[in-house]
Amino acid sequence: MSAVKTAKDVIYTLLSILIMIVLAIVFFIIILFIIKFAADAVFGSGVLGADFAVLSAVILTAVSMLGGARYSE
Image 1 (cartoon, rainbow, N blue to C red):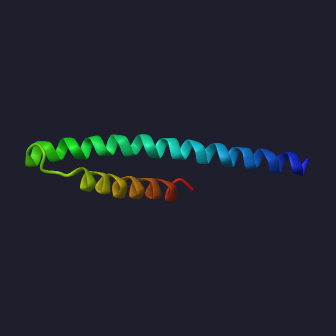
Image 2: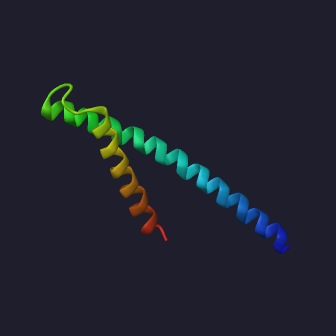
């Protein structure tokens, strides 16, 4: 029975990793849209470069995912 339980735990772990990756990608796209929209609204069109928009979205996504993982225990 312990081998079956271990196999189930491994499968659940892999599924949770896959779901977390998908959620991180979706969250990144949403954050990137918000940052791009806010930069265009505040600074005007074309001021924020794509590299800085992606960098800020990556930072916000990583901090949000890590912060959410810390408090979910």
